[in-house]
Image (cartoon, rainbow, N blue to C red; front, side, top):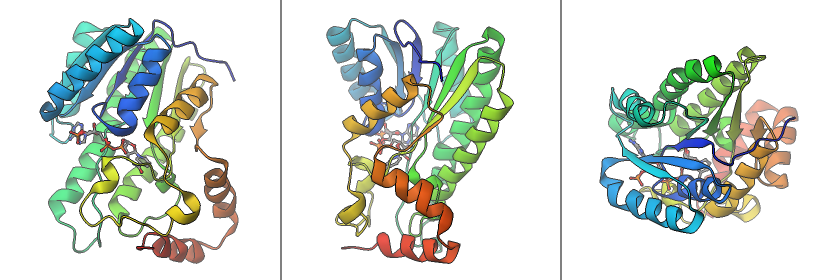
Length: 269
Ligand SMILES: NC(=O)c1ccc[n+]([C@@H]2O[C@H](COP(=O)([O-])OP(=O)(O)OC[C@H]3O[C@@H](n4cnc5c(N)ncnc54)[C@H](OP(=O)(O)O)[C@@H]3O)[C@@H](O)[C@H]2O)c1
């Protein structure tokens, strides 16, 4: 595995206004990468504040872009705006995400379509748009923020988990296609992390899963994620206990048992 140098490269991060995306922006800036940070139009002020802070603290260039990735043309508009000022983007960090918590047959179709649009369609289209430029240059990275939810069905946030499984499969398949091009992919697969994502209506404050799986800080997830990315990892689950659970036990336990335990774990403790 070749180590990756981040100094003076250009990194585009979606969903950078809060949570893991915001902390990833800080970690890349610490490594002296130049940034394009993106989020929803309603977050313009928060993004500008973050950009000013990163420029002052780390002396890097930071551009802000706002676009709603849930709209039909949102991903393409973001791509066009980004390459208009930065024809060379070295790392695409697909991070923007939404979730809804509840039973599949009761959650609104609108909220479920939004999850698919942001977590799946936008990731896929941005990858599809940036990859040809990267392949032409013979260098570049796709950094997809996935989840441990990619590896097991996730009752009560079933559409969310399904979008992560899609992205995991897509990223790993594309990685095989990219052999010899100089372009690589990486997935960061966190467990539950203390961000606004877990404060959606209905999400239990004390999930049973937290008692052994814990709830991470977004700063720790971002730091470990960027370290793993630099080391050239392809798939990275922060936390040895989560790695053991999702990469080892998950392979050997019967599927029905995994599904049953997944359902029990997302109940209020
Ligand atoms: N938190 C966890 O437990 C956890 C675990 C594993 C993986 N992840 C993944 O980590 C990523 C970041 O999530 P987070 O936990 O950091 O949550 P978060 O704090 O809510 O951040 C999500 C980001 O995405 C942005 N976003 C949402 N909808 C958007 C849209 N339509 N267009 C553009 N941007 C949009 C949000 O903007 P606003 O601030 O305006 O909403 C925010 O900046 C997601 O992909 C999530 O699935 C999270």
